[in-house]
Amino acid sequence: MTSPAETSETYRPFMGAAEYSQLKTALWSVQPKTVLEWGSGGSTQTILRECPFIENYVSIEHDPAWHARIKAAVTDPRLALHLVEAQSPEPPRRLFNITKQKRMRYRMEGETDPTLFRAYAEFPKSLGMEFDFILVDGRARCFCLEVAWELLRPGGVLVLHDAQRPIYHPILHRLGQPLFLEPWQRGQICVIRKSDDADALTKAPLQQAAG
View (tube, rainbow, N blue to C red):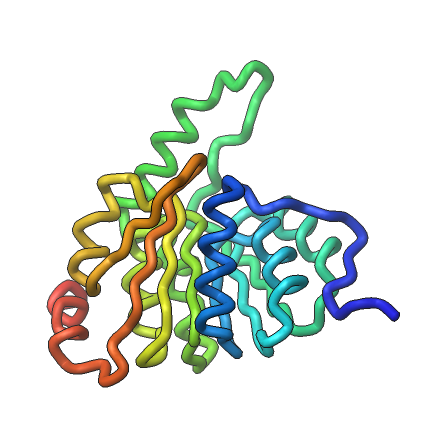
C-alpha cells in the first residue's frame, strides 16, 4: 500500500536538522487541517509525508523550473501547488556563481519593492480560505508576512524561516509576540501565535500600513 505522499523523487527541506525539528514540533502541536506555504520544496514534500492530519496544503512558488520539479515529485492529493511569477525574473545562476551579487540585489529588492512580488504575495487572498498554519519561506517575506497574518485563523500559528535577518524584525514585532527559536544552522525559525480572539488591536497596524 502506498502513502498519499508517494513521490518519484525525494527532496530534503533546506533547513538544518534542528530547524526542521522545531517546525515539525510546531506542526504536531497545532495539528492544522489547512496549511499555507510560500516557497515550495523539500519542506512541502516532507511535511505532507509526516503530517497525516493536514487536509489541505497550499504552496506558492515563483520559479517555473522549480515549480515543475516539485509538481512532478509530489503527487499527494492534498497539495494545491501554484506558480505565481514575479513582475520580472530573477537573474539566472551562471558558472562559478558570477551572478550571485545580481541575485542578492534582486532578492533584497523583493523585500523592499511591493510591486516586484505583489501577485506572488497576494495570490492566497484569491482563494477565499483561512489557514490554521502558515510557513513563510520564499521570496518577498516582508510582504508575505502581512498577507499571512490576514489569512491566519485566530489561534493559528505563523512560522518564518531565516528569521535572523534584521529586515524581518520590525514586522514580526508589529504582528505579535515573536518567539525566535534556538539553536539554528541555516536559518532561524520564528513562531508567532495569533490571539484566539483576534482583537482589533492586532489588526490595526496592518490596516494602517495598507493605508
